[in-house]
Length: 228
Image (cartoon, rainbow, N blue to C red; front, side):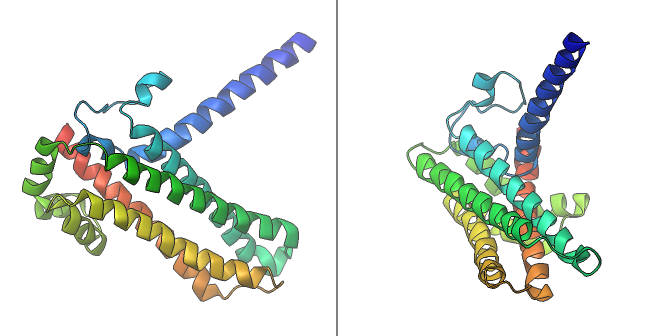
């Protein structure tokens, strides 16, 4: 009986690890994936459990790290949002309420740091001119219409990729995170005083998360269409 329980525990730990690993990798697949291909040739376009392969080339770890923290921040904020939604009927555990918000802030700060490190590292790597040329020739209008993409967000992306401005794209990603952090800090200052945040600012943060995710996702979609 003890051996069986031990086996179940070990299996559970393995499952949790695999789920955690793919949660980060799969999110990177729709947010920032293949960004490394514009800074170095020979980028990897497949997912693998081989850690060394999945971390090649050198920019990939930053993408996975930033995407993973972004996802954790988003998850924490959704949990915070749930607490706000249910507060009238369930009340609020003030300690957990604060801790959930703090996790959203902390992970977004880490996501920003990781992407800033990516930008710094990429400045030392020559651009893949073939990829830049493909981005500048890409049929953005046709792609957007075919896939029913959000026009304002996609057009913002196009202003960077369409002229091969990868540094500008990186700055926009970081600016999106900053925009979320500014609003999170605003809510944090209210919650730290023991007050409930205004629902309008909560809505705007939720919108900012969604827009930031779509911006990174659309980049991945364009890159995938070029690479495959």
